[in-house]
Length: 114
Image (cartoon, rainbow, N blue to C red):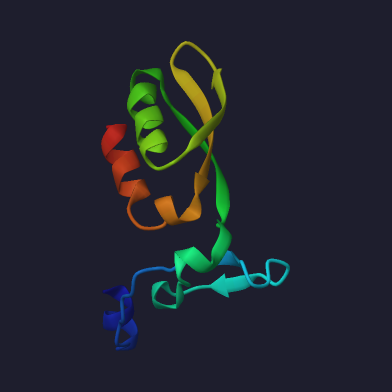
């Protein structure tokens, strides 16, 4: 809204895309970058897919750690560390697929930790 008001700019909102790498059966040594869902190859022709992974470090009051852990697990997250910083703060580290957090993860994280 600010861009529109201050610069009279037309705003276009699109869903973010996350690129994947596909290794095809016919040529597994030549990876294919897929950055648009409509370009996804037929799964029967793919050996495997690779996707970007992020390391998320979350510091939260201890009373919310259960909900945060559940949120990350439902987003295909893998917990790699958990430390109690003091009697009230917990540091949790997760590896999460970028595709799982790029759209609405932050909103859910805020709602879990109110």
